[in-house]
Each structure stands twice: as C-alpha cells, then as structure tokens.
Image (tube, rainbow, N blue to C red; front, side, top):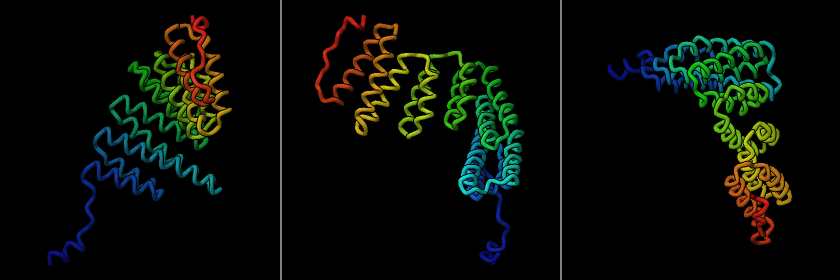
Length: 270
C-alpha cells in the first residue's frame, strides 16, 4: 500500500526559499501573479524576498510589453497589473536590508511607470532615493540610475543623477552604459546617456568604444565618432589623461584608415 499511499498523498508545499523562488518563477511565466504573490509572502530570508519581488516585477513588465505588442492591454488588465505591483509595496517595506529595499522600490517605480501610474512611480522612486541618501551610499543611487536608464525612463534618471555625490563614479558608469546601449542598437539611449557624462575623458572614452564597434561595420561613421572624440580631448585639462586618450584615438583611427601610424604634434597636447 506504500506506493498507493504516495499517489494519493497531498502535494507538499515547498519548504525552502529556493524552492519557493522556483515556484514563483513558474507562476510568473504563466502570468499567475496572484498565486506568485502568495508564494512570495511565505519567503523568509530577506535576499530571497528581494529576488522573488524582482522576479514578479520583471514578469509584470513582460506582461505589459507583450500585451501592448498584441494590442491586448485593456484597462482591466492594466488595473489588475497595477494591483499586483501595489501588493509588492508591503513586501518591499519588510526588506530589512536597506540597499535591497532601495533597489526593490526602484523596481516597483519602473513597473508603475510602465503602467502609466506616474504618481505612484514618483513616490516609489522617491522612497528608493531617500533610502540611498539616508545611508549615504552612492553605489545604490548609481544602481537606481542604471535601472531607470535601462528601462528608458531617462527624465527620472537625470533627476536621480543629481543626487550622486561621487561624480567620477557616475561618469564611469554612464560611459559604460552609453557603450552598452550603442552596441545593442539603442542609439537614442546612448546619445542621451552620453550627454549626461560630465567628464570629458569618460565621454571621449565612450566615443572611442563606439567607434571600435563601428570599425567593422561603417568606417565613415567610425571616423566621425573619432573626430568628435578628438574635439573633446582637446578640452581635457589633465595633460596625462589628454595624452593617453589622444594616443588611443590616434591608434584606432590609423587602424581603421589603414594609413599606418599618424604623426603626432605633441605641442598640441601641452
């Protein structure tokens, strides 16, 4: 009877957080957000609470994009998704790790924004940025900026940038993001990101990598990017950084044009 008993034994609930996260992922893939939220309520460890919340948010964003693509995002579906996102707020408030809590509210802000709930999006973003400011961690604010830019929420990203005190760190991240967007074909995002880079060195460096990407595709475009970078280099105040970047640009331009090593007028770099 042992085997027969097993067949009729009630299905056991997941006992570990990792099992519950797997169940949440499966439910989200089926757009069963209500059931996924029930599972998330049972998650015990803070990092797993954050992970489960992020899985649900990304599922909601996927649902929004696919529904819009198919022309099926009617008001009933939109309101239902808004309700699911609102249900994540108490869970986010229960995250005791402030860094993860800030990132959770940033995710929620993006979800609200994509659902045309601008006021709720602003409140969630303000909560995220207030937490980051409270603990004085620029890394969190930079991560929030990355989240917003990656989601195409550029105006709010620009606002968040103003709160980053370590400008060098932000410019480095922005230059990497600009190149990433350019490489993926999102040129509008790349251009906007590039405009927000204050450091001339990092802006020229981003253009250098963009030109590297174009080198095998469109040499004329690559040269135009390099020429723009050369103009920026002339304004770099630090002579060491100016010289370093000038060499990089010159070597890449010579490689693209096939003209060999270009003669350098060192007097221009003094």
